[in-house]
Length: 384
Image 1 (cartoon, rainbow, N blue to C red):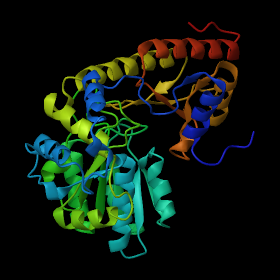
Image 2: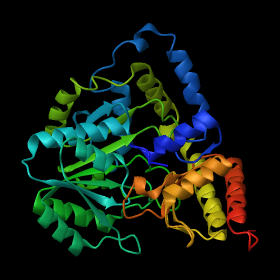
Image 3: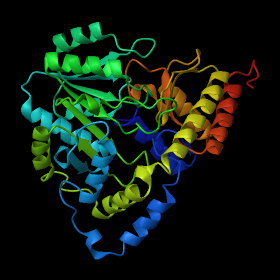
């Protein structure tokens, strides 16, 4: 068949919605939000004020909860913050702002494999996008990176930590070096932290403590509280930049949903900023990742190391080199949806991404279907 235009995540997810099956393509959590959050939402929903416009910069109580949460890492004030409609709007608004202060020609850059929004966002604004690889240990060759930055006149760098689809978390030394290069070559860093709470072992380094004015920190409550449909995120930036971003926000997003902001603010205040909920979800994601890693390796996949997040990133067994055809066949035969790697990198056409942030029983059924698929594809051997 002809490959669909647009996102392959949407393509395979939509097929599940239309035809049924197991959806491990879309990054939607299979976990219920905190019960206390839902009870607060119900109580707040009967108040008339909650259904009107929120302050453009965000619910004041929510802004204060965020400020207090980060105060041990950095000197954060309300003027550094803006509540937006999910991290996606935060990334868009920040990139949009940067295009108004940068002089063409310049490029944007991120690390392969790349979350699909980054290059597509650059394309919307006519900004060339540069892909660069991590090394074999998921480290950064900074000498190579510096050459690329100079040759391509890179002025915007996207960093996700942990990443999507590759769950790499950036450490202190790596971020220190990125900030040094930023200061030397004048590029801006968009730091996507939406999976920061869902690490597997060590908590990822938070770059806010570096107090770098060219760094924009973007996060949301979508993943940490399993509320991806609420679309409540935030930007943290240097005060001068933030004033201009807020002014732009008045004419784009205007404000995020008032009721949902209020509910989150009250929940965070009463529940130690989600710490009554987040560790349990973190442990479930870790358990699911290592379960699925083991199951995939049994049938010949090579699973990449991950420091956290929702996803498993794996190279196909040797007899397969086209992940789109593999994913298509897997869904057509057994109604199991995954995402071909080319959605994130044209050089990773033999990779797939799997969402592991679901109930373990669903992953067990998915693993069973994978074994069935390979048993049929390899009649000469028994897949255990």
